[in-house]
Amino acid sequence: MTHAQPGILLPAPRLAVYLDFDLAAEGDARGALARLREIADGEQVVVGIGLSTVQALGKHIDGLRALPAISGPGIDVPSTPAALWLWLRGDDRGVLLHLARRLEAALAPAFYLRDSVDAFQYQNSRDLTGYEDGTENPKGAAAEAAGIVHGRGPGLDGSSFVAVQRWVHELARFEAMSAEQQDLSIGRHRVGNAEIDDAPPSAHVKRTAQESFTPAAFVLRRSMPWARGLEAGLMFVAFGRSPDAFEALLRRMTGGEDGITDALFRFTWPLTGACYWCPPLAGGRLDLRALGQ
Ligand code: HEM
Image (cartoon, rainbow, N blue to C red):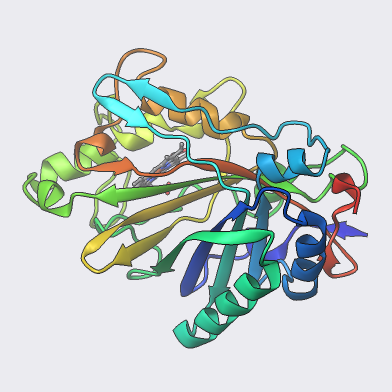
């Protein structure tokens, strides 16, 4: 019986660490993934495998592709793929640190750590701007339908594609806006979270209204605020049964449909961006048969 990694469908944790790894030239990726399998349970550690790793193994995962770098009016969205992405979930910073060290050691020398970022909950699912994030996420069966692969056979069913972008907020710029400008840039009221029906088309929730796309662009968002010293923002994380919905949302946010860019870009922008394939679980362990393992 195959299942999605449970951390994908569960609510976001109190604390998290994100680890990005590169693959050493001629590194033994298979050996490292076998060791990863002994540790990663899909709940405390969610695993995403990059295109470069799939290619190094001589395999192909239908749908997995690099996130496109996109430029729009005054906007550059980068593509910064990594070989492996791990999302460590928990509620104790020290436990997560030791887990990260254990994973780094298990993956060496084939995979080496490029970056690690700490993330946390702010006032129960709010972005650092104070707005509730995740309200329009699909729930229950709709969440599984949007976020998890079905009907593609053993080894792929239960898997997911995740888009990850680290956005940095220029909070001083955001705070210089009036409360009304702030609400209109999101398209919701910060207090009470009600949607603003007549918000301008640049409002974030107008740009990304999932049902307004053809086909509907539902994604399962599991984003969390991050901070490093006083630098801070949102680690945007969205799971999908393919990368298509995320790319459609991003294209419209960057003005690709009508030249109108998302008002979010007035105070925040992505520093990184990548797409990974999150394998399913079989018997409680990562099912890597699609990678010949
Ligand atoms: C710093 C970056 C971002 C921030 C602060 C942010 C914040 C928010 C907030 C506050 C909401 C309204 C509440 C909710 O439904 O969750 C929202 C909705 C949404 N966001 Fe974002 N978001 C960001 C980036 C993105 C990106 C990059 C995408 C996709 C490419 C995206 C897709 C969506 C979607 C699909 C919705 C729900 C729209 C609907 O159907 O009503 N967001 N976001």
